[in-house]
Length: 151
Image (cartoon, rainbow, N blue to C red; front, side, top):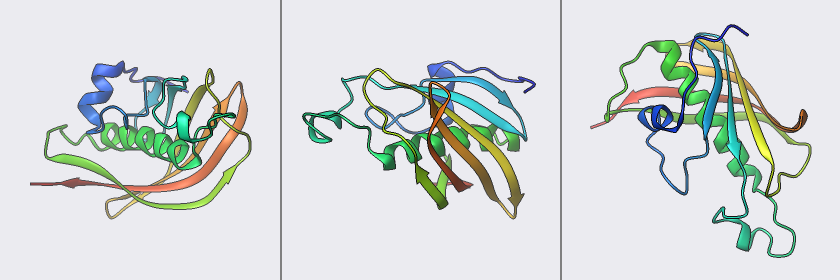
């Protein structure tokens, strides 16, 4: 993958409105505008969901893995559209298809978030996405999002 952009947490926070405990992208490793992104989420026992999911066998909830993938895809949509990043511009997660969970994600795992643009039509971005741990697929899904200006 040709890399146009690598982002640290400050860059990520400029692109996403999410904050603790809901910011689920820690670093962008590779981003090729109009093509794909690879990002990281470091999963630690300090995550606020682990005490309840599950107390004696902590597992990252699947919906949060999907959300992490959607956040990475949102960053890619922003970068690919050349839309100026402002407080009034957000990426909304608008759809999910074909979600499958292949292995649990537990504390100490490093979740690699990968999304590839499959289509961009009439303001709807479609992505093929995978979350991997140690090269093994933990989750895969087709995602959709849209960029919007809010007041």
